[in-house]
Image (tube, rainbow, N blue to C red):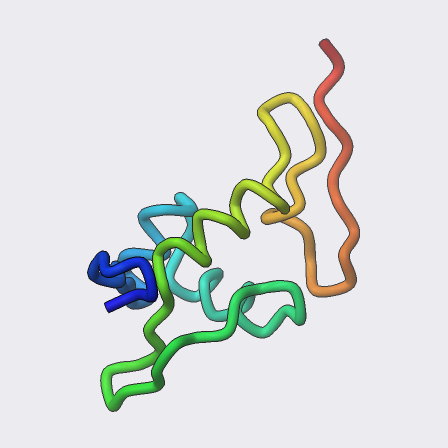
Length: 85
């Protein structure tokens, strides 16, 4: 449970993939970035993250549609420009 008494929502790579709309391989690429949330556990089946941490990361780093997409950026942090409107 979290400090506020609510159960902690957890997500493995599959659930994070669904939240981000990316491949499972991309989840692990993103997880290697220093700005991506740390997993709350590493199990035999893989890493597990707190859903709240992932949702906050999405809010902080994923650009609104029509702007550069930081989630789609390569490891070097280069983003692709927005499409001309």
